[in-house]
Image 1 (cartoon, rainbow, N blue to C red):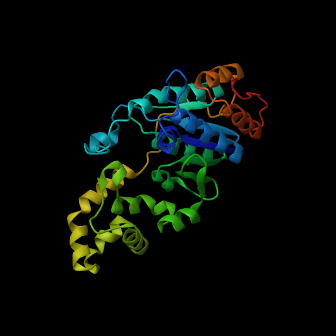
Image 2: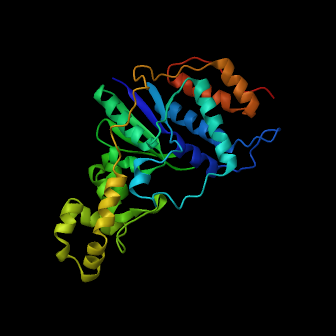
Image 3: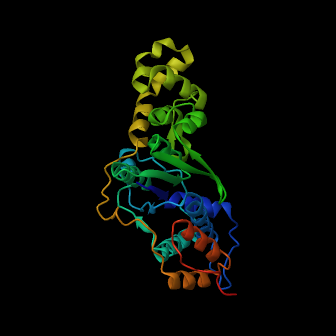
Length: 303
């Protein structure tokens, strides 16, 4: 019936911040690299994909069930720089002005909101493209209705993965990805895997035995060193599996899935872009909205 973009707002904002120099600022001193990069990313994917609607999910600062189950979960991450945190509000202002639906839920991560929203939209007969720089969403890919548009680097370097793409990238199919990730671990989330098990070994084991249950049931078949590492770290791998599996039951009652089209307030967008001194971005956003069937002329901000 239609194609919808589900966007990981935190992931893309962080990537935008680190992709562009922090000396991007207005005359008044407001740093704008993250909000400029995010808006550029949004314009790019809207123009390229021309979706029927879009939903942007965000994390909240409160702990989630993962933090409660594993106190070390993401504990190594430093607090976001002040100049990034200051721009998160501006990113939301841009989305509000563009009429883009956003959602955040205390105690839930943006990825879980994406997983739940994916189920809802597919259940309604739609196709979904998840836009993210987080590999956790690989587990959601399902032909022919769910793909991941993964941000590799910068503002416009993306790759669109279907099931074959995920298997080519990781060595396992999407339905086995979380088992593979649990065995390998995820340094970005401070979740160590089994020592000595990298990407290739993890994929080989998962494909041969079908998952953690099969691997640990046949641990005696492994070399002495690998057997020892597996036996000593079984609990760690199984806990990883529980933490890495995305939840599909997030409370999204506040989202109207019948109204995910973009309805921009042209005057507010122009005011905001003038304030941010985005002198060329208005035209690019206008072109992106036209690709979605809109006709709002935002134009470049005034000099």
